[in-house]
Amino acid sequence: MNGLLCYCRAGFEPELAGELTERAAMAGFAGYARTERNTGYVLFICDDADALSRGLPWSTLIFARQKLRLFADLQGLDPSDRITPMLAALPKNIRFGELVMEHPDSDASKPLAGLARSLGNALRPALRKAGALTREDNARLQCLHVCLLDGDHALLASSEPEDSAPWPLGIPRLRAHADAPSRSALKLEEALLVLVNERERVSLTHDGARAADLGASPGGWTWVLVRNGLHVQAIDNGPLQGQLLDTGKVEHLRADGFSWQPPQPLDWMVCDMVEQPRRVAERMATWFREGWCRYAVFNLKLPMKKRWQETQLCLELFAQQAQKPLIIRAKQLYHDREEITVFATIKRG
Image (cartoon, rainbow, N blue to C red; front, side, top):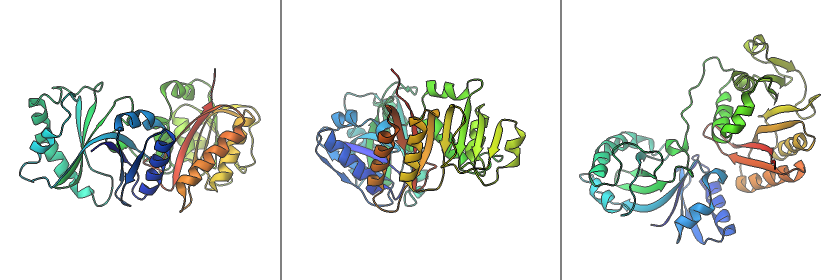
């Protein structure tokens, strides 16, 4: 089988299928998506998956947590010997640096976790004996992914280290902090890990860096910024967790995040306000057009229907109204729900 295997949040398969279909067509590739709702994955079948994969970098896909190059769909596997057909299906000219055993992140697939672990323990030495896997994990080489869909059904795929998520299923394992004001803190932590590169993270933590958190209450995103060393103006008519004010790095301003503007330019602006996504996109564009911040992370809450179309419209609206060349990265993160997270900064040079 020739194509791509992409993981997504269960329930968002139609959005990912629509994104892959449209993006592939724009890049000049014919193909079609195969999926079922609530399975947590989408297959995109095409004739030249290698070229398509290069044309659709993982970092540019919004609804894909992970992007893999699919090369085998093994059905009817004998439970007494699943390994032999897997070895036979491997490409002959590739030595993998790591084996990842996984299953889609869906309720139906969670019972496969135990089988995935035990099968991985048996498959790993068999791969090394066959010369298909390095003796020690090597992150610089392609990674072999075995995705179990059922006890007798597995997908075999590969990932390139520079064009895939470094975490199984594309899910960073973040620990919830007991002192965080809300679980929404995990959304910003994940955004800074997935959407922000090392150079940009350095700018986040330099001495004297300042930020605004629009719609801050109860303070989850402000808490993350403070942990990264920033001084924060928290904008919300609602209350903040008292411990945040005790840090001496937070100024709570009771104001409307859609009308407030900083008295002087800031380094960062973050926003997780519950509002119509187009209105949020327009306000975020104003911040860049007026030069009020250098970097921004914000969420766009998506409607129940036509979510891919609304995503496209909002991102285009944001880019147009900013009236400046921007770098824009967007993902539906693991800790997002009915929303996507956007990182933006002014394109320099």
